Amino acid sequence: MKRITTHLREAALMLKAEFVRDLIFMRRYPLEPLSFIFFMYMILIAVLFGFEQLMQGQTTGLNREKMILGYCLMQFVLSAQMGWSGQIQNESQTGTLEQLSISGHSLGDVLLARGISQFPRHALSFLALFGAYALSLADLNFHLHRIHWLLLLLFITAFGVFGVAYVFAGVTLIFKRVGFFFQIINFAFLGLFWQDPARLEGLTLHFYQIFPLTAGMAAMESLLIVDRIPSIGPMLTFSLLFWLAGYIVFRLLENRARKQGLLSQY
Figure 1 (cartoon, helix red, strand yellow):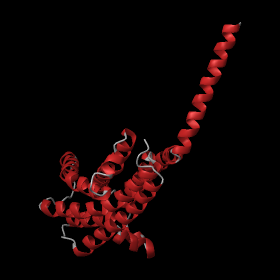
Figure 2 (cartoon, rainbow, N blue to C red; figure 1 turned 90 degrees about the vertical axis):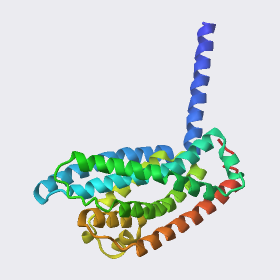
Figure 3 (cartoon, helix red, strand yellow; figure 1 turned 180 degrees about the horizontal axis):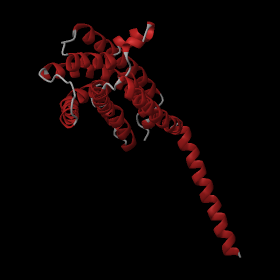
């Protein structure tokens, strides 16, 4: 009887310890459980929206070129972002983030160097995925004789992506685990890529035209589908402005993380 009581007491203590551990996890990483619930909600919404678009496409015709281009660009954006926030999260968990932050170079400069150095790999992945769709699906109306212009548009778009990635990396410094939250954002990006600008108006249309990701999508659509070289100047200007804004936000969040001692926490 005494042994049974001892086992029950130990089991109760173990359950209490795991319960407290779970509460600490939720308090330390609040975005993870909340964004997971919303992510599961968004999956079904995306499926329902997809079926609706397919049903409409049977009567109006699906723009397969735009859907393929938007999907490939979303994969490019996702890869570029995870190269920043994902590595910040890994280094935070392994305890090397603080060493990186005191290496003699600013953390923001290190992230930028990583982003530029990884661009060839991300661009090659984009081209491989895009080429696979272009070769495997019949009757696609892509104009592929200006690949050098496509690479230039990807690089300009990448700097706008870096601005968004700076914000994600800064949020990662504060909250540590934000994977599902970023998945929600990337679902939103995919929806933006597939929007028809002709159905937008006011501030929404203006934002669509200057936001680097949608501006890059529109430029690539013009190049690959319409067969027209887009204007580079405005796109480059807004990409650099978004990059600068993201860098400033990152430095503010980095300073906050330093003051709260979060860079050495893992």
